Every structure is written in structure tokens, then in C-alpha cells.
Length: 128
Figure 1 (cartoon, rainbow, N blue to C red):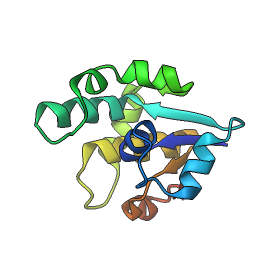
Figure 2: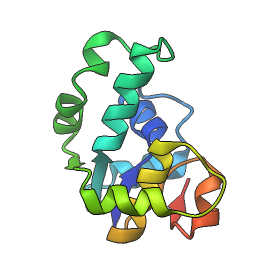
Figure 3: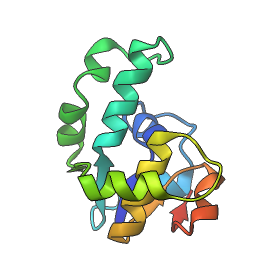
Figure 4: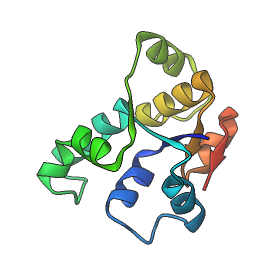
């Protein structure tokens, strides 16, 4: 299975937080799965840190690539096609980071690991 982590799922995995569901934890820990983190999540983490909306230490907020690598996860770049797709998605959901994850999950057939039910309205295959 190819799993795309929502930003909160990635942060909670790194922090070993009890907020991550047992199902999500088990799927991420399963070494037979490809675990993917989008560049959009790195952008979101750095942005929220800069805005003072993140409890992450500065080193974690600005070395997301290192955290991805240390976990053995895969990086997913944002392409122009991803941006076009995210920008053209219907519906009222306005969060640009979520819209990018939706576009990337749909175009690549990825399973999105997220607690946010808003993704379900876009036909994303979501687990939590």
C-alpha cells in the first residue's frame, strides 16, 4: 500500500503522539507499505512555525527532509500539474495544503492517512 501522510499524521508519528490512531500507527509501521510525505506538508509545517502556530522546535520545523529521511519515508514533490489540479478542485474547502494533498492522492492513487473527514467529499481513499 502507498500511504500519503496528512501533515498532522506525520507530526504525530514523529512525536510518538497518542493522538495518532492505532490503525494509522499500524499502517505506518508496516514496512511493506510505502510511506510518503508531500512537500506541501513541509511547506505547511514551516509556515505554521513561522506564524507561531506550531509547538515543534525550530530544528524540526526547518528540517522536514531530514525527518522524512530518518524515518525511511519518501518525499513527494509538488508539480505544476499538482498545483493545477489542486487549484481546480470543486467545493468550499479552502485550505491550500489540504487541497494539494487531495490532488496528489487522487492523481497518484495514494491512500491518505488523515483524521480529517473533509477529504471524503473529494473521493480520496482515506484511512484513520
